[in-house]
Length: 417
Image (cartoon, rainbow, N blue to C red; front, side, top):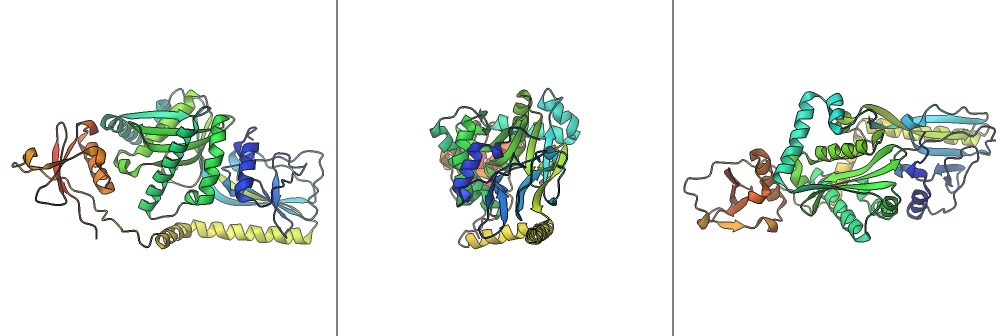
């Protein structure tokens, strides 16, 4: 069980109440000292402060304390099965219903001196080679630097990074044609208000990858004892051919090992990269503690259990993915769909003369498809952005020639449908 869980800290709870609870009064049950609750209106039901916005909590039952639920039900979201440990022994009439929900994944870091030791032990030879290659290519082609903000950050820095965080996240999910809960104004405003004081308290960190002065990957982590918890991450999809997300994970694990963290917790969600990097999987559970001597409380607990069990069954059918795609389409009816065909690089004509072509300043590029194509060229040819020149054809509106230090290629950007 985590002693200093950020999701039960006073900063987290106060911020959460301001954003998600009309009822400002916390209720504490002496028998469950680690958690506090908010009462639902008109029902004998309480939910833990933090609700579904936590990334894992745990609790204990105090010995010798009576359980004055008085016909009520306590709903505890996101019980972290790995850090919860053995379930508490309950005394009548208190009973517990457990409902399995999301899968979780974590990396056990204890015993490793470097991230390369961790990769050697837990990744396949092929994956280790590829991930190191991604990092080398990224750092070769761009002016890459890494920064960690924890304990100290100016408000101006923070606002700039969080604004960029939002724009990159929106860009990524627009590209995926899915909605993302974190982009909802209520959610985003909550994290914006919460994260700044958490960073100053050293309970959180922003990990940033820069290309020169431009943030191209940002991750938000919270800290609990010797555990780093992955809250939210994004990378600039223009750099997708460089597998920027993998390099971000390498650098974060490197930092966590150097800081003697025992665990890096990827938290909720079953994604391929989590399965690849993690050493352990676990389950997030919803716990219902209720007064079994009360028929009303027993029926309410049974109904809530059925609801969440059915919801998880539908989630297992991946209906939630289709729902997110549908809601995205409804919100983006007027969004023009770009032609996503992969651009083919062709040989440069022998008649090419740079003086006959208009050179395009790379700093002025705004077209996403064009930037991706340039970065794909850098990746394939191991060229540097600083050596690159881009020319537009005088006879083809969508025709270009790209010239690096050692390589050249011609390509055509398909017109939008």
